Length: 348
Image 1 (cartoon, rainbow, N blue to C red):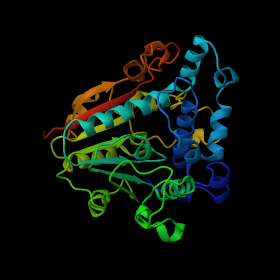
Image 2: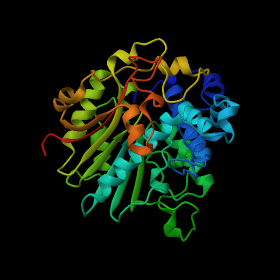
Image 3: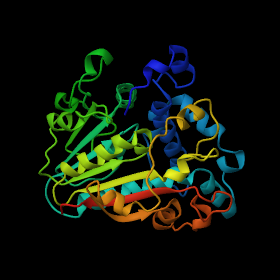
């Protein structure tokens, strides 16, 4: 992901982006805030007990301000449906990717790897059941990794220090469990590594392998809320690079806007309202997929198994009627589409 720190003053980072370097970084905290709101509901699709702390007070306040009173409280069945309309996009997106990861990790025996590209404030390594032998890698920008590491330390979560950040951030030692500490949130994978890398650059593959990634082991690649921030050329390289590093049994799980959607003035993402950071965030969008992405993906090393809309994943994970699920069929948002894709390497 490109470094946008030079375009932001210290005052902007502190007041608009909650101390982070840019709107893209702050969006990671907002996504965590919506996971926290979902976890508060009686009929929640998942429970993320770390989300509120990973989001931080500023993002939680922003998220709650965007949630009308009739959605916050308990209501009738109709009220629950309206609650889902307000922020089910983040909820069903999270649940869909949870299910894809779980299915991939349990589909065959042996060692497995998960790589989160643009990991943000993801908490799956602490909240999802996993089989033995999983190595978990998280890649993002330095400011996000440092903020996440500090939040995890305060939570009492088991962590490994991101490479290059431990000294300047005064972070906990790697694998502190070896020191006999008791953790409120133990790691679920056998191994967890997070490190900074520029996903628009040419070195992230070497850096991934330097941190212990093994191309001969089946990998689940997750690019959630990432590709729209990369240039089209960087997306091409990223997809081809992940395919090159993938052996048989590997899976890609990703989401992306279509190209037409990126050009809409009324574009919304997830459940964001018009916050101070919103216009800056939207201006960061660079790349979208063609309206029929299957052949396009094939040319970049991936054979799609599913290409789904929000409405389709909502029905798949929650039984929700598509007209309440934010896809092209919903009234008032014609032409607005996000793809959710699972794929395997074309070499398989």
